[in-house]
Length: 355
Image (cartoon, rainbow, N blue to C red; front, side):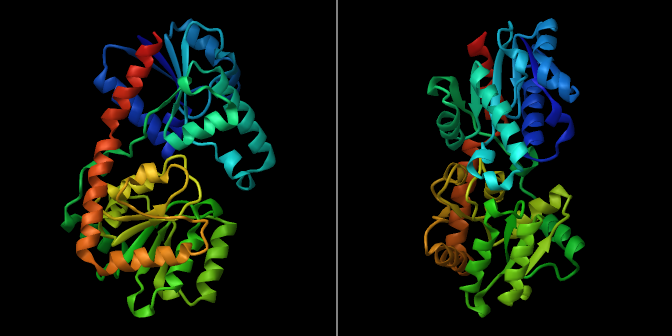
C-alpha cells in the first residue's frame, strides 16, 4: 500500500498539528514498514489545487490530509482520501478569527470533510461538530484519539525534575504551585482560574504558574491580577522551550488547571495526567474525554464556576492522599486511551478499510 500525506505541518509546525503528523507518520513507518509513505511538502498553490493529481501520478492508494485539509482536486482520483479534523474553532469561537480567515477555513475545511471518503475526528466532540456544521454522515466519521508526544509517557525521576526547575528558577526553585499551560486567549478562560484564586484565603493560596503567551486577553489577565493584588500568587512564563523542563513542571505541580470553554481535544490535560498530576478542567467539548471520569470537572458557564474551581484547588492542595489518588487514576486512564501505538494501529486499520 502506498500512502501520501499533506506533510506541511509535519515539517513546519512545532505545536499540536505538527506533533500529530510526526507521531502518526513516524509510527506508521516503524510499525508497518512494508508500505510506502510519501510526504508532500508543497507550496500553497500546488498543495491546495494540484496535490491530488500529484498523488495519483505517484500511484498512491490513500491520501491523508493530516490537518483539516484535502486538496480540491482529490475528488474522483483513484486514491481514497482521509482527512483528520482536529476542531472547528473558527465556527465555535468566530470572534477569535479575522473574518477573512474564518471564511477561508470554513470553505476549505468544510469541503475537505464533504469530499473525504473517511473523516478521522480526534474526539467525539469534534465528530459531533463535523456532523453538526458540515452535515457529514456519522458512518463516514471515525473517532481516533490523538496522543501526546512520546516523552510524556516516560516519567522523569524526581531528582531530574527538581534539577530542571532549579536551573530555570534559581536554587530556591518554586513555592507550591498549580499549573496552567496553553495560549492566553479568551477561549482558554484563564480569567476563570484567576477569579478562583481570589476566593482562596491568602494563607492557603498557591502560586498559579502560567506557561503561555497572548496579546489582548493577556493584558486583561494582567489588569485583573493587578486590580486584585495577585502579583505574589501568579507568574507568567512565556518562553519555556525545554520539553523536559515542561514535563518537570507538570510533575511537580500540585494540580493542573485548564478552564477552557472549547477544545478539539485538550493535549495539556493528557500531558498532566501522564505525570500523575490531578487535573481541574471543564465539562464542555472534548475535555471530559481527555480528562476521564476521575478529573475534577466544572461547568465554566455556571454562575458558581469560580467557586467550583476554588473548591477543587483548595482540596487538591490540602489533601495529599486525595490528590495522589486522583492523579493515579487519571494516569491509568490516559495510558489506556491515548497512546502513539494505538493511534498508529487504528489509523492503519482505517486505511485498510478503504483499500
